[in-house]
Length: 130
Image 1: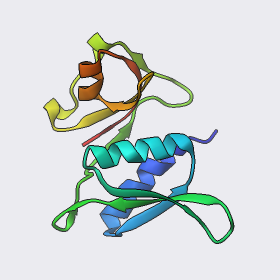
Image 2: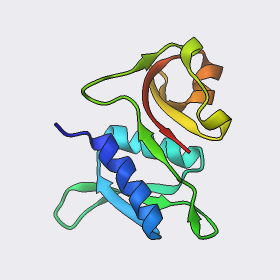
Image 3: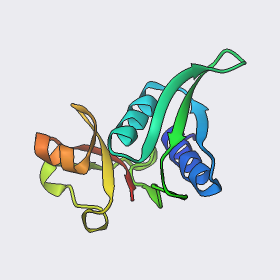
Image 4: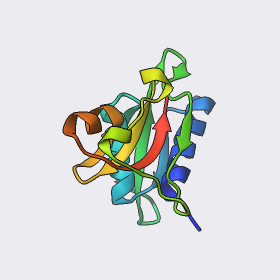
């Protein structure tokens, strides 16, 4: 079984640790939405949809850095295809005492844990990032 979101976040983390300026991942709508959310919350520098040489669409994700260190120091996949984890708005906990974020798939789109609490909406916890 494949987990495309886990593959994407691992590629982003590995590219940041290797010092690469960007990474290309296969395109999908959910990956694009996750990438836009990571740009919004400051974990990525940019996200662009491009067409590769073989004709397939790819996402070009720009890695964000603080000096020479990547902004993403750790990522943990929470909800997996084999075991989905859904939470209500009252059950959303802070990540790393508020220094990290959890990305949720909600009826209002992909939101961070803080924004989901503001919007009073729960959903599936995709992953935590710090």
